[in-house]
Length: 400
Image (cartoon, rainbow, N blue to C red; front, side, top):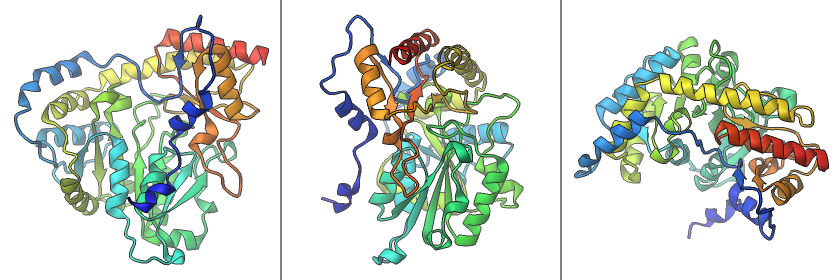
């Protein structure tokens, strides 16, 4: 077996299952799951219809590069959403969800020519982070470097905290905006500064933008790395790859549909990798995806539901818990002022409600674990269920 597998930490939800083991919550309370970022809104009926109507197209293998119409739909959405023109033939590639793409992209990009520790390639990432970033780095033979995001730096990765010798070894920098779990949005100026670092030290930026369609202010949607590239004269998005998904935008996590877009000099070899990797998107999935990317109204309606949840949940919790509406995504990331594992376990034991300890999403650094004493609460359930959950959490806080 690949010895690097031993470097992987237990996945957060595996750790959560162990934490809850042996606990019997009150059976009079229906269980509410707020630990996983899995949207529970009803998928758009027109997307489901498109998928159903295309099931007759299962009689041939799909091409890895995807249908021209699918790539054109993705490019059209990028144009509408970010004002950036991308060539669908050379700058867009279908992927079966951003999770597999974030992982496989690192395998395709990282070069481990030297076995020397001082020359070991680096994959830098925010801390806390989506756990795929770390796993991808380790299995590619790279060193993961964690850049803490804290309230003190407005939950943005502090790029200035990374020493020059680390940047010189960096091959990939992961960014996530809006962030998971913080919901922080990286500004255009921040993204420009990151691109200057990428140019100076010769690395690639992988921008995870799967929450880009979930934001608080309709007048100020989160910018994309692609916009920062164009604003700095990088007309072919040099050193940039962005990752987008329908899971959050369209509430279809089971469709496993996303795309990457950016520098054609990166997309072309990544396509070659994927040809051998074998992750072509089925044609019915592509046809359903075309319908989803071509429609913006359902995504706007989706945002309204999340805003309604924040508007109803935060007033219930705010008197007793450090909660604010983030700029994007669908999480609460409060400081619970106590051990996050104990808080999570006791909440489950008394309220039959599952959240996720923040320390499970981060790693220990010299400055500590930025997820410690925080929890991630996913507002993915229907509005009424989120309100019920907030009331249970408040009752727990009042009695503990």
